[in-house]
Every structure is written in C-alpha cells, then in structure tokens.
Image (cartoon, rainbow, N blue to C red; front, top):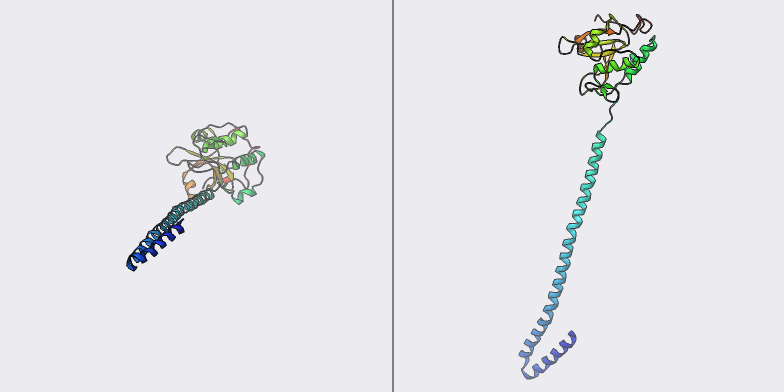
Length: 245
C-alpha cells in the first residue's frame, strides 16, 4: 500500500515538472519524502524507547532478588555461627591424686561415687536432687540419704547435730563460715585434702582443695553422723587428713 502511494506521488511530481516548472516539483518532492519518512522514524524511536523501558524495569527486579538471596544466605551463616558458639557444659575434672585412693570401706567408696556423679550439676537454692540441682546442704543430705543415713537439711543444723571429728576421713562433712560467725556452707570430704561441694548461685558442683587460702580462712570444722562406726569409716590411713592446718 505504501509503494502504491509513492508511485502516485511520483506521477504527480512528473506532471508538476511539466506544468509548473522545476521549483514546484522540487518542493512537492521534498514534502512527500518528509511526510513518509517522519512517521517511520517516530515508530522506530517508540520501539527503541519501549525496548529500553522494558530492560530498565527488568534489571532492578533481578538485582533485588539477588540481594535477597545474599541477605538470606548471610542470615543462615549468622545462625550457624551462633549455634557453633553454643558449647556443651564440660564436667569438672577429678584431681589425679583422688583416682588412686585405696583402702576405702564399701560405704566410703559408695559415697565418693555418688558425690562424683553430681559433678557439673548447677547450683539451685533449695535444690536436693540430680534432676533439679543442689545447694550445698542439699547435696550432702542427698548423698547420705542414698546410704540410708538421715541428716538435717541445712548446713547450720548439720554442723550443730552431727558428731565433731579431729581427723578427716573420706565421706566426712566439712563446714565453713563464709560471711558471718554462723556456719553457712558445707561440702563432702573426698580424701587427699579435696572436698566436693555446690558453691553458690551461678556456679556448678566442683572439687576444691581445703588448703586453698580462701577455704582455709573460712573453715569451721568437720562432722560425721554418730551412727557411723569404725566398720563404716576406717582409721588413720593415706586418705585421712589432720584438720589442724
């Protein structure tokens, strides 16, 4: 259709050359060329602009999705780092000298094993079981109860009611005055100068040495249930300790 129109205009141009001369023909030729060229140029420009717009609209969405993937991967990595920081609670070690204890009675050996099994458990005020946790006197009462021996609940009452001893044997109770003139802390003597205890809120059951300057300063004395006789607790041996520091 476009070629047909162009042929008709060329015929008009030829007739104009004959009738009006060369100048009129030139003007008519220029107008026809501009009239048909302009729409085609505009159409090409519109197509180009449309293509450019579609590209610019497509690029940001791709960039955003790429950023989203990066942020998700960073979040996963951060979660992985947080998890890796969370380490399991390690059980306190037993001093090597305690591993070589000999000549213990069956009851002493049992008390040692029961107390050792509680190492690493958290301090809980008023606690007296492995499932919940222990405070200091809750631990000593629990260990003795496993041997069928009943003792008072608090450290002060244990100190007041049990029989005093001058030479420590594994299984005896050791008491301390921490912040006043009254006894407020108790542990179980294990031998070789070491005792096991539940120290204070925020800490866990551990083994400490009686000759440590802190415990030596606050030491109040040792006690043993009167129901325990010589067959339960042996006399002077390598595991005993004179408490006159």
